[in-house]
Image (cartoon, rainbow, N blue to C red; front, side):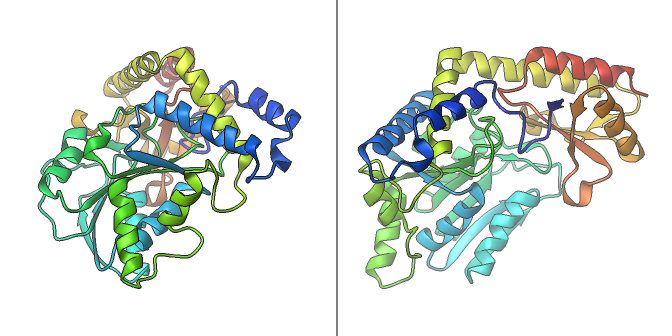
Amino acid sequence: MINFSPGPSQLYFTVEDHTKSAFRLGVPSMSHRSPAFEAIYQHTQEQLRALLSIPHTHHIFFTSSATEIWERLIQNLVVEKSAHFVNGAFSEKFYKAAKQLHKKALEIRVQDGDGFSNPLKLDAELIGVTHNETSTGVSLPKSFIYGLKDQNPDALLCVDAVSSLPNVDFDYSKIDSVYFSVQKGFGMPPGLGVWIANDACIARAESLLAKGLSIGTHHSLPFYLKNGLKNQTPETPNSVAIYVLGKVAEDMMRRGIGTIRNETEYKAVILYNELKQHKSLSAFVTEKTYQSPTVIIVESGDLTERLSKYLQEKGIVAGEGYGVHQGSQLRFANFPAHSKEQFELLTDYLTAFS
């Protein structure tokens, strides 16, 4: 079966072999304070920096998931006010996490399927924005995200790139924090989040701590930094996933990040073109500016269940519509683990469906 679900998604073709290698090397029982683990941490960090062009102004930490990072961001970086651009279920969950942590969280919302175009001046310590909303297939222009930083230089701009990376090429000088998890674009099993944070984030957390405010306990940014500088983690981590992530990033570097991005664009174009001319199906996101290249949402209405079963019979697993869209949409991931040939096969099957 070809898994087009946007997460957990299709495994990258080298993941199984790297996982077997991790077990042969004893990684699962390796002490996270040992030189051997430190070498793994350092290798993974170096490969991510090379693949994603992450500058040394930004630190790389490993967490249990991207969902955890929402909580850590609010705890470490916000005294009172945060602002959240909400255009789907996952951007909304970050906003709700801030509310649950008793912050004055501002919600700037558009309806599902729409994006944002005008950067706003905001009264906030932290601005949360989702580059690629996995629930709706909306991708925000990088110019909008960078414009938020230009308009709000004193706020910390934090970007959810869970279903964007490694496809998107960010200018990190315009972003304070980026985070993702590995079960989407990196084609791995779930259970590892990656938190990229610059020195301004560290300084903010330390200033809150100096004021006697709570920023969490074992997972505060200063404690992440203290351990990260030694190529260690605060607690015993998912060491196998950290090892495999480094190897997958190395494989992607060998394949060429430019090649991966060009192939992603090609695959997205052929699927969107098919939906544009299909008699019964259409793209949920209609404005080209906001159409995600990595999570493509098919508006299938009453045909959804029949389409899903039809594709399964052909050996294809589609992702269900998310939340309120379940039963009327299908979601198709376009990650490096999905080949051009698989996308061409998918479009052929969609062409034949009526």
